[in-house]
Length: 236
Image: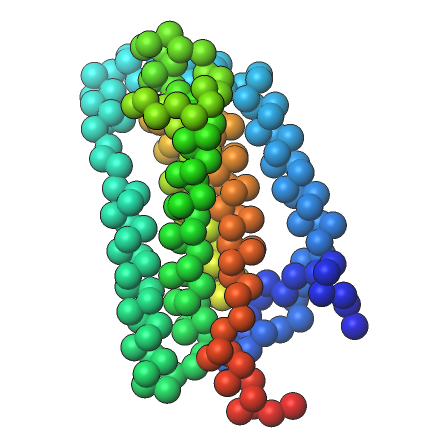
């Protein structure tokens, strides 16, 4: 039997909702995370400013593009609150009706992972205090870490949107793996949008993706009483 310390059970059976033995090894997970961290560091030192400046010039070549890029509202907190409330409301509604399946496990995981990801990214953004591309370009601030800076325009590392939505998509992928390619495609579109509007540097996005994935991996593994009940009813 594979050791619990070296492997993760990430997939669910789509018909019954029970766990299946589709495993991702711990060394592989560490390798992917390490590669992401290395890419983040490389981007921080060699790619971020060049990409951000290129995007800034492209946006300023068209008043329409610049208007669209700068007029996007930040609704992340509202989305996190809505997802959290609806997830827990759906979870308790189903539990009280005696429904214990993969949908209840997903709702519980989603209601836990999404707010945790938001809280963690908020803390790290304050710790690192990195200026966003607009602050770097317009205020001539170096795009480095300004530790514990509460000023406006600082705190873009890691990307909050990428952190939260990577965590959400990872939970969806864990419980509904059939649409995994769709989740990955949506994350790629989000990453492209964050960079193409100069709201984030490339390394911000990479760091957010890594943080979101780790958050989901850790907090999606909280034992669920509904799952235990279902397994006990199913028998050996």
